[in-house]
Image (cartoon, rainbow, N blue to C red):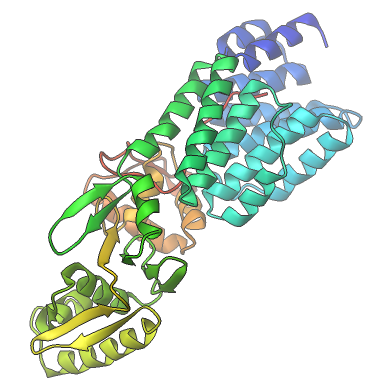
Amino acid sequence: MDSLITAAARALAAGDPVGALKRVALRDDPAALALRGIAMAQLGDLSRAKVLLRDAARAFGPKEAVARARCVVAEAEIALVSRDLGWPAKTLDAARATLEAHGDRINAAHARTLAIRRLLLIGRLDEAERASAALDPAPFPSALRAAHELAVAGIAMRRLRTQMARDALDRARLAAREAAIPALIADVDSAARVLSTPAARLITQEAARPLLLEEVEALLASEALVVDACLHAVRHAEAMVSLATRPVLFALARALGEAWPADVPRDMLVARAFRAKHADESHRARLRVEIGRLRAALLPLAGISATRDGFALAPRGMRAVVVLAPPVDEAHGAVLALLADGEIWSSSALALALGISQRSVQRALDTLADSGKVQSFGHGRARKWMTPPMPGTATSLLLPGPLPGV
């Protein structure tokens, strides 16, 4: 490797893409193409970066398997940053195996960190946690340690382990400062702000107030019966009854939870559950059926008693009842939560992350676009969506931005 290539690589590792380009911008050998691709990615031109990295991978000879594998890892990071979640994960696994087989442990670890971040992004927390636990970040360069700790913090936030998240963010901040890369320091600071931003709202009969993530953790560990409008479930300690696939039952449970300890009139329950402006006998009959189904579903946690005017929730024991709701009630809050990271998403990536159909996501995006809450770029399959972070809205995912190439 000649001196210019070495100098460009060091500039990239220090977060100086312009300095790297000054050394290799006019060269078209494979190593220079790869470094130019990483530099363009750091500068935000992801399309050009992807082309350069693919050109570099093709230009490396059959005996340069490690160099080709590094190009694949860099392309995988671009795919992650651009939210191309359909990018083949098996390709990254093959590149990681090649790097490990040839003793390039640092870039192999970087590949593993990218895979963990992708798993976190699509909500596969168990796999992400196992993969993260298998990595020892101690021998990593400081930039890679920071990226690893960001992923650890993201998993901890999703698990509602706020102290673990704080500890991981402290380690990430220390590693980022050691690396002296401003963009990386900014990523850590942005992730840390999630802990000081309202993550949910607590709703009772008296009032509603915002909750930080650590307060949500304390609430779910308390003796209260929680009607969770974030997960569409009713829960107490370790017991949880999911109503995610039964929206009518959850609408009834939420209405009863918000009114507790008072009852809810039948006409109001009909309006909340069936969206009917005027309740007739058919609505009242259906209400009795759905209340019976809800009573059976909640049997381990609470009962439902009939009153003169309607129904009331009766938790087992002396527990209080509270409703845990998103920080801002939106018809398409889950889509907005993902877009709140400020990155550009495709509808297919949003569908993969949310576990719903792409058509459902597209309908939600069209509705949000009509109200001016999101905006799109491009056309057809190249169409992408984004929105600036919404005040008072904290995503439940930690979505760190692009990190400098290693």
